[in-house]
Length: 431
Ligand code: PMP
Image 1 (cartoon, protein in one colour):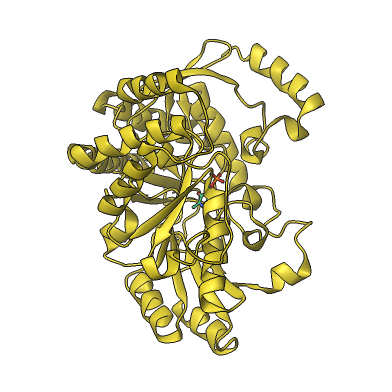
Image 2: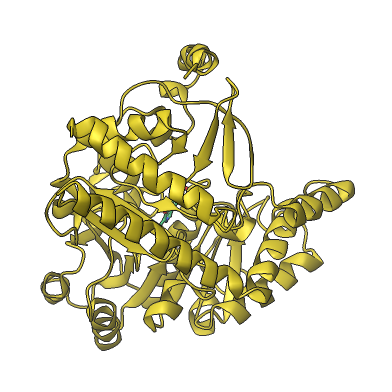
């Protein structure tokens, strides 16, 4: 496969951009080699600068639920740009999108739009702190909530990939206010709260983790957290930046029947445009300025182009329940195919999958938390990643990421992925 244009671009990029990329995991450091530079994408495919075609399993890290460049979203955006790009003033579509989010996610009574998942989580914990008058938060090891200082403690995703789960530059004071527990460990959470009585403002988690690879909540875990938060007056925040509108219309909280106090949402709402949002109980959200004293603002928040894309995307998801049936079926088809290959090749690797999210972990251990995710053979993953890429399958370039399916992937594409997976496993293991 010729990737010379990508290579030349990456060389140049490194002169002008730290590490040559604007977000670390894109640099392919975890898997070696040169990142491919994307030129365009349509439906289930992405195309690089050298003209290679790949089946897309990253989908912009989640938001492209309907595949790339969906006609309806394209039209909404091109209509919107006729009326300028930003006003920094209220618009009709912001009201419509807020109303729709409140309809689709029942725990959300009021919602504030921001520009990224990072902003959403940073703002959500500020409100929780204001509301409770407490300082500390609890997060889980290997969960990633964007790059806000408070979250770069035992963080997943790129931070895990690069071995910097605790980033330099985060002050000791901030770090001291973030308590961490192993995912799926209710006892550890109870102990943390007991030794920090009346000090914990919020407990935040990805209800299904995407950022240490795909990791599911154990039975009773989410319910247990809800109960603890109720007993202790702690704000339960579900970070559904990846799972919102994906694992069900109302996100993982609908799927698992759990009602958080606050929810953070991200890129999916913008259909791929830079958007985030946080929302939840009205009595908590009424603490947000100018309704209340907790300050949070943004010139580009509720941007007219992003809301045009988002409104179209969410309306489509709301009106087409078939999207979720298809995502479930596609996830199952892929998982069944992968499992059959593993069995055929007598391999014991762990496949975690739920709906349209999955990770194949190169470990024989059950992956239920960060230590078990880290038991994976990362060198082998790197080889597998490149074997898949050479067969035209574009995966997340780290073991600690989830893949995301879209409705643009037909059975034909899924079967190609299943076949490429089997061939790649044989190749990297010399079977
Ligand atoms: N929360 C979660 C669960 C995420 O997966 C991410 C990013 N992938 C974020 C927050 C941060 O979002 P953003 O990259 O848009 O700032």
